[in-house]
Image 1: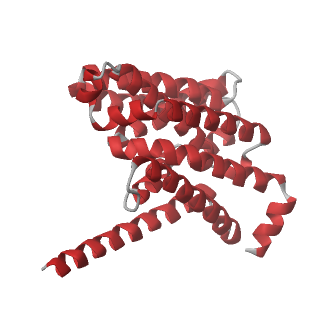
Image 2: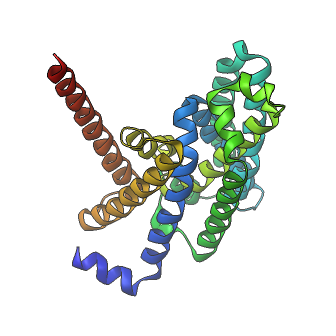
Image 3: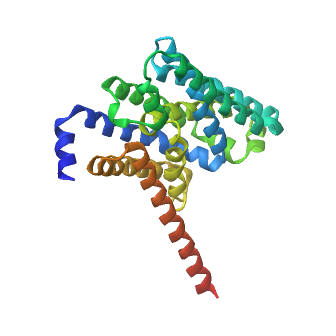
Amino acid sequence: MFEFIHVLQSQDFMQNALTVGLLASVACGVMGTYVVVRRIVFISGGISHTVLGGMGAAYYYGFNPIHGAFVVAIIAALLIGFVSLRYHQHEDTLIGALWAVGMAVGILFIYKTPGYNVDLMSYLFGNILMVGRESVKFVACLDLLIISIVLLLYKRFLAVCFDEEYTRLQGIGVMSTYLLLLCLIAITVVMLIQVVGIILVIALLTLPAATARYFAPSLGSMMILASILGAVFTTSGLIVSYEQNLPSGATIIVIAGMAYIVATVLRGLVSRFRSYDKK
């Protein structure tokens, strides 16, 4: 622990890693809450895995892979959202197709790019310790964008998540609101890729929010608690991974998963004791 604090004080790479983890936790807590209450984890998974195609293409043509991920994530979110609302019976098929094709296209571009593509491999499995100062600024800007839009359209998102029919009766555009929500989730996915990688991004997007749901009485408090839990998970994951020389992304997810399991067990025990007392 003391060694980690010393490295944190003296090394830029650790400061960048911790800062990105904390910034990503905010967006993760806010948008992960919508993913959990709306029950669109599978849609989020489709978006997250599709972006590998954009990252591979961007890397092949000499661009920043994150920029490629950003573009493809938005396109996938809009396509999935449109089909989900208009042709609900084909939703699972489209998500599965985008998931598989996106990964396959990404692998083909990685294969065709000369040299050993260690950068893309780090995006696949996550390497928060490699995040630079520019990435920190990029994530901070995306954080600000997400929070601003959520604060501005909080009631609209709330209505779309819990009662689409009521939202239509109020004259609110369900499709435009839902597509915007999915685009914000797509942005969050791109942010989290830099923290835990494509493979584990859905776990970090959903576990803090799912854990917070057990203790939060409202959607707003759930977002705040999920953001705090995300910050705790990423920080403790960085500490443990550094002390034990383990992959940071995987360590963060293991800690988040253990916390969720403990919270689930405790919630079950409390419910059982309450039922027993009533008898």
